[in-house]
Image (cartoon, rainbow, N blue to C red; front, top):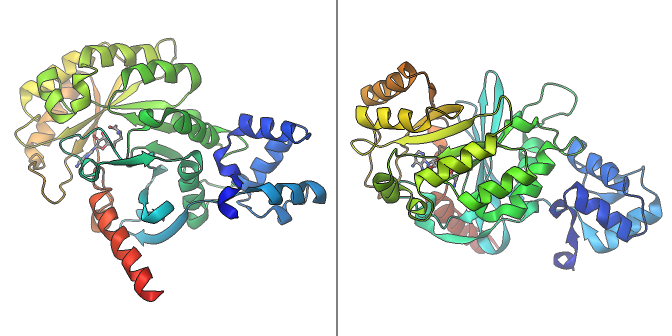
Length: 363
Ligand code: SAH
């Protein structure tokens, strides 16, 4: 039965080498196979002509190369894309592509739901279901690259990947590290190391471990310059307060020239968007190589928060810039398809259920 087969999307290069050696094959078969999967997007063993017929037959017997299934492909007027991806038993996740003049960014999910319960995030409202497998994470990139028609030897369409979809990537550590390795691997998607960014709310011990095993860029969801406010917005702060988080971030980029931390700061009207907040934020990160990403709050049903006024956003940015911090205001994209930060979730579930019901009716 298909479900019993080993899905080779779950293996990174090292796992594949071990796997081939265990079959009595040479380790370089891993690179050969990866080129088929990630460069040619071929998942049918029969087409892999540089592998012997006997090896292809053995692979097909016990393994498969099965990406998660895309059940909805929505394009926005501004060129953004959102895909609804079906996992097991009616579980869905979303993947978003955002084209800009100088790059194309794919935003992928790492968990179904999220356990962190941040006050201003739609994903929190659906609770936590489970971690995604490596296949389900790398499969999002594989599917997006296929549907966008990305080609290997030309101008790449997907130049950046950010783990900023649903879930807290550092709570799915092993799978996220393997999947990001596959994104960066030359025989995988070959995306430049610093263009794969992991966004975290600040799981401090995992940050120390991450430095040892990965070369992803780091984005950190700060959202408040003091512990009292951050405890409220990002409950994880009660476990790992700001001082500990900043120490871990400094350590992450220590001795890595040209690396910096991207700080994400969602702007909530009357909550964290005053002049004092901006100054406190600047003081906090002054001695860390930084870039600040201000995210105007994206509302969703039943939220008590509002987006800061444009004037407040401009003032906040101006204060940080005057204090020497590179600061950008994230543009809201894909408005017409609800593809913005913090909007991936509630609707997914409702839509997932609706689609499931529609499928049942149709069947
Ligand atoms: N768990 C990871 C990834 C979360 S999503 C993390 O916390 O970083 C990526 C970013 O979107 C985070 O900075 C998150 O705080 C932010 N975000 C969540 N909900 C939002 C909303 N409604 N509007 C704007 N940004 C939001």
